[in-house]
Structure formats: structure tokens, C-alpha cells
Image (tube, rainbow, N blue to C red; front, top):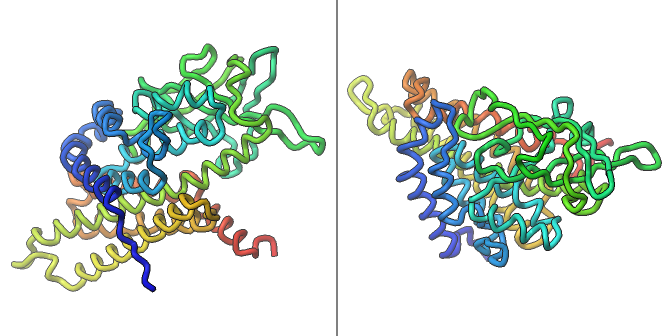
Length: 387
């Protein structure tokens, strides 16, 4: 019996729709946003009208009734053209809205999800801290119960979608107590934008993803209702580990899109760029580069779709998500480097999409779990960690 990896008709229709949107709407405009380090509100608004921010959520909360496979398909097609737009969608859905859907009360879901699903509002995920990074358990932000409120103090860094004009909330992890052995109890708390004491810094000056919003956050005696606790007290770290497992599938899809976009641009360039009286694509050295790039993108696609399928069918997926994220992020860097080489001097010019892809690729080996962390997770799932 053979496996059929073809998409069902409804997902293929989604893929074609997002592909057309990326080429017709995103591609002509995103370069200017990118060079100005400006957030593309117009494009994001259109993505909201298309229902992209609601793809994996039930219709009862304003979603499209899809799943993580549908989200990954949309992310891949967007990232084939631009990663800033793709990461805005990825962070808004898998990091901003998904924690509320997975762990929120019914009231929290009905309060926040409809606006998050419509794209009218963006949510953010406040986990990383200046002294944390991969050691997410070393959280220093604190939340102390004071009557019917939590009082939050601390800071977060590298938080996507946290300071736009349409950002509505940031879900933050904070230490809310300690276990008998002295280890911290980490909880998740929803902090609405504009809450007194909640300060959003100016955007970072970044190497890539320049049309996305990334900022540092600080909390000084920020008071939010006790009802803003997300899930059980002391379960925040475990909740966000689950969210990160899922998010790695989304990042893998995004990375696959970037890798495929490098192929698309390089093939088009190799067909038209003349050197020594013929297209450079006639040279076997270029052909072999393109073949290897396509092989990597194709294999990456199979990896993330496998992980997404396991998630959708409620099967174990932690190892497969780590495999997909590790492989796809590293081959995205490889393809971006080769695409730049194929373009020669033009690949170093920002007017060419591959220059943007080169700048955008490296963060994929770092964000939502570094390549080193993915290897640790895979080894642990193989049962050899600590041996």
C-alpha cells in the first residue's frame, strides 16, 4: 500500500488562495515596508479578512474550523515570498491565540478569541527574558497575589507582535510561588495592552524580519484581575512547553516556505541571467545547486506535514516536531546562502528577494528553540539523553 501525500481539495484550494495573495498583494509591497522597518498593517488587515488568523480554531470562537496543517500550508506559501508577514501570522496564531484556546476558561476564550481570529487584534507570547533564552525555566518575572489581582514585576525580551497598534494582549510567564523543594511555580497570566505599569519598548533594530514587530517588555507593579490567570497556577511552564512543541511545526512550515522561495527565485534568475553567451542555468554547477535546494525544500515539507498530521490526529508528535524544526531551519539557511551565491552581486542587493531571505533565514535556527535544543529533545525522545 502506498502513501498519498497529496492535499485534500479544500487544503489545496487554501494553498492556491494564499499563494495568489502572497504574489499579488504581499510581493509588490513588502520590500518597501521591509526597508523602512515598518509594520504592514494593510497586508495584515487583508490576512484577517481572509480568515488566516482563525485557521486552526473552531467556528464557535470566530475561527475557520481548520487545523495545524491548514495553518502550516498558509505559513509556507506566505514565507515563499516574505517571512515578516509569515512570522506575524505564526506568532499571532500559535503563540498569541493558541495558549488561550488550549488552556483558557470558556469566558477567556469568548472574550479574546473572536478578535484574535479575525485579525482585528494580535496577541503575543511573553516567555523569553534577558537572562533566560533557552533556559526558559529560569524565569525571574514574578506575580504576587494581592486580593483579587495579580501584581506583576519583571521583563521580557524578543517578543513578536507585542507593540503594534492592534496588539491586544501579551500572555506572560511569571513565578507565582515555590514548591517544597524551592523550585519555582511558574504560571501564565494574560496582560491586556495599555495596563498601567506595562511598558513596551521601541522596536529592536534587527538583522531580518524587519517588517515584523519585535520588542522588549517591562512590568512595574502591573495589576491585572486574578481571573486573568491562564490555566492552573503553577502549570504555566508545562503549558508553554506544549505551545512551543506545536509552534515548532509552524516554524518548520515557515522555514520550508523560505527554502522553497529561494528555489523559486533562483530558478527564475538562472533562466534569464546571461553569462558567456548563455543562461547560467545551462551550467551544470548551477543545475546541481538548484537540484540540491529543491531536494532540501521537498524533504522539509514532508517533515513538517508529518509532524502536523500527528498533531491533528492526537498522536505523539514531540520528536517529529523537533526533527522538522531542526531540519527545516538549517536547510533554509543553506538554501538562502546558495540562492545568494547563484544571484552573485545582485544577491547582495536588497531589491532582490533573496537578499531579504538571506537576512531572514538565520533566526530560524534560534527562535522557538535553538538547533541545539532540538537535538537535545530528539536525543531525549530516543532515550539516550543523560546516558
